[in-house]
Image (cartoon, rainbow, N blue to C red; front, side, top):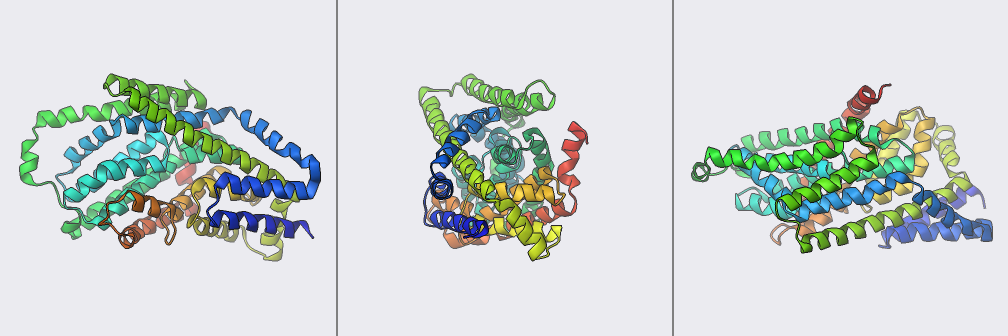
Length: 441
């Protein structure tokens, strides 16, 4: 049996296990172990130990639990809720204003935790009840929250970009800067769509009633702006100090986690229950990431041993005769296909060891490709029938919002993301301008 056939069997077996609902790290690790033992016998037993040492030697891995902790601390302590109240008052008077405020909240949450799941939870628990109560159309509400929460994997400190940087061996600082402009571009596109649509169809996003607006004095409005100061302090203390060269990436994650804790303590919300819930959830998510990466390293080692990366390059370029840009488009389509039933971490682990060396061989910038991967993940998250975000929203939404409503709600935002992806593909400098400006070409 040729190594190419073995590689296809290995990949197919892993996909089958994932489709049947097995845990990601279990499926990937099991397939890697079975094929390693079958190919190389007892000598393959050294592979998981080598993967463990590699993982433990990755100093940037310390950033993951720090960022996860920071996100949960902000969520559990209610700081994100205060921020939404500020957006609610200041943007509510215009049609679609609360939708605009929700996207701004998601941008702020993304800049403080880097996880789309955290943004989804905050949007569903804080923004959704308020939007529905104010008469917003339910399809508009679910679409805004899903699209806004997807920005969490794009805007720094994106945990997904940290994982991509580790697996693809690319500098995380450059990936963060590369993701900032496309992330803000998508946020502006979402906001423009919401405001224009609600001007054309006012019933989708009515403004706050005049009576309610008159009850809020300017003194109260100015006071609410204080809710936005503390999150800005957290963002600056973390990302700002990193970009100024004062802290390293690991140090900036520790600064962010410390700042979130101090802000919660300052507001009198760092209770025993908040701390226990934050630590428990942070430990659970961080351990999951560690196990997944460990399994991915073992899987990638077996694939490298088979020469699968070179085989894929020969298949695409020599046998099929595809041009580099055609190969790139084909890669993005496979991400969207896999995203219908896998999350971003699983997709990254499965294909990054295969695609990143090929991207470099084709002459593309791996930093730029990391942004393309991330935007494609956002699209895949919301692509029916099994998009990851669709079922998260269904689990968090009230009973009156059906799965059909959720499917309908994401159509315009998927179109906007696809346009955004095309813009970044055609104009790579949208992503590369900032890292080149900061780090130099």
